[in-house]
Image (cartoon, rainbow, N blue to C red):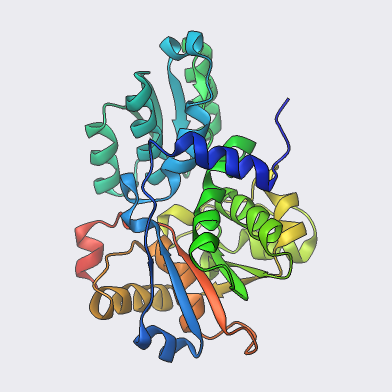
Length: 317
């Protein structure tokens, strides 16, 4: 039986994963404020271990596995950032990790995951089901599944991003978080609403991967075909079964951005703030740059979820 996701569960996760994760910086820029028309505070998970927030949730779950189960290993499926988070946490506790990754996953993420000692099983995201592949691996090994978002301990670990942000900047009017499967948003919105009940929470998605935007409007989980977007970390075809009800409670709206707007946000962050951000990590910044928020929101926290971008994609900017 999974525990309920609460602010206290996020605080417990923060204590558990403290030896494994960096407390990432909160950056500001007068140029960014001017472009957005408000004060913007960037929570920069591109400086996290593994280059993204995913190590937080993966560590929280893997550090909770009973010691007698660790020799059987862990199994995960991911396009890259969750894979690296799982590989890092598995390496930390000395358990083998097997990860199913799509054939079109960014090369830099595949290479980094393999370098951390994980075994990689590739699949075609257009014709194969990653969850079925993971189930087969679990059946043969007896390992523990570490899902990318649909687990309370994963969500609680991801929520430590907002916990740290609000400890650093406690008087925010709003929070913007990118949404893929919804684990980061579920954790962040839960702790944000717990600490500041009046804070307004917004998700950000690519227009080409608008499953959560559609789901919230229809009041049910909507599944879309595998989306073709530069934001590879946000290609989940539907919000999670466990994450979606939490998003329904906490999220005011989803802000949609185009592929060009994502690239422009990456370019701004690289040239003006000198930070490398992957497309998925730039989606929330793109939403802020497009001034989609209500004008009365003056102080806004924006989660920059990761910085793992292939050099050939970076060169196109």
